[in-house]
Length: 330
Image (tube, rainbow, N blue to C red; front, top):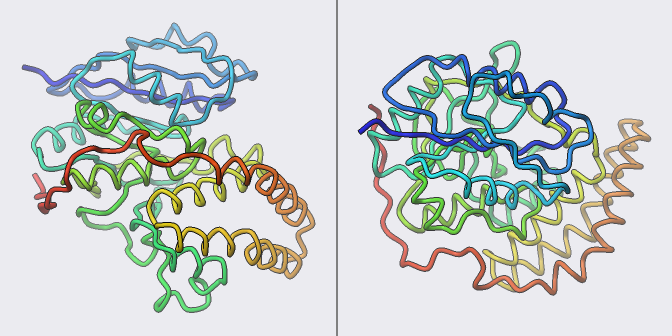
């Protein structure tokens, strides 16, 4: 039976990037698969980016949510509109090559031990983004806050795998959510994304829960897709910083235990704004200073709600962890 693929794209004021992404999917080379449905989950865009897409030769549906409910929540709603065997979550600031979909889907279909597959992400010049990551630990975050990952990167690796050039295929802890391919049954088994993460870390959390089921992420280096990076979050820099910090605290509370989560929260609130502001002043960037101040105002105002949110029993895998087997190249 020919495998089927649903594609979900969460859109928020992405301008022409969304159309370019969809047109690249429509130009995909034929292969031993069929696209069941492409769903654009529009989070209340006001720029018209989700309008007038009917001329693109795809089985396209636009889910107009009417408000920005966050990336994970939008993915959860849009994914429920399809029933294909495989599910690809794709950012609107990506463009797939003609062979990206058939080759990546073929690899995943032949690798039942793999949970989530990512491909090599490149920029306009063809340079590779170092997009894979380790599961973050408190020391990764503290090293970043204190700048140790920049002062002594060989001693203080961050959770991003920047020291690895991404030239070979391998099992990794996490692939970036810009291209996130998986069997649908895994997405459903994990009950989708944890919607407490409005933006950022929802893909890390999902990858962690998949690994607990013995279904690791796999990075496929010889298949590529374009990724602009930054995406529409560039439009709202204070909010981007706020949501990143907010999700970091939620992730720590969910996965690190009370003591380590409290330490990280204190470092984030008390030490990190000082280091961010000092670096911005040294660089002479008034805009970064203002963005940082606004971001931390948002974070402090939201902190009581963050710390009072229950973190058990919501979108967690309810099975015992299984051993992870290395994925072989096909």
